[in-house]
Amino acid sequence: MGYKNNMAPRRRPQQQRSKATVEAILQAATYILIDGGWEALTTNAVAERAGVNISSLYQYFPNKESIVSELRRRHRERVSSCSSPRHGGTTREAHVSAVRQAVEVYRKNSELFRAFEELPRRHRRQVETQGKPPEALALTLMHGPSCGSDCALATFIAQTAADAVLLEVTLSRPELLSDLHFVDELALLLGAILRGGLDSRKPDS
Image (cartoon, rainbow, N blue to C red; front, side, top):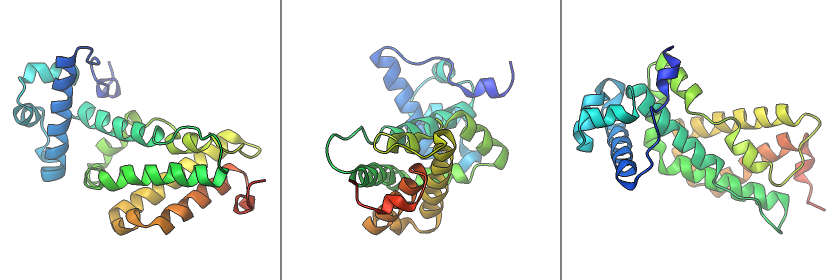
């Protein structure tokens, strides 16, 4: 079994007690990662802070990389599910609503996103690959508009742009995460990409 295959959780919790154990592990890992960084994050340290036996941790996670990968997956999932299809209203309003909720995920978890970015390059790339559902926010925005001539390419570009902008803002200008003008401009950018041109500036017919 290759190293990358060891990144995934060993199994998903089914019973309430097991789910509580996994939540405790992930919360402990979040605290340690934010407070002490990658070097401080060990499976023993996580188990101790979570108040669980190390063998219980290993039932779900083979290593610390798999824990971080699961943290990333969950946050990406929150972004991808932050907006459901809208009935009524304009495409523009649907875009702004989806982006506003995605930005809120970054705002509430800005410290953890900074910690992700400070991971050693090799490990950061591995957990990004394992923990990132594809085109999460862009697919959310696809509920409203029909995209341009190449939907797959437009979706990829929109997600790449969203990732880059949101991460850079989180790292260097976090105050923008509370700025409604920023939300509006990002929604405009993504809408333009997904609709295949700057005609997204025009009112919906």
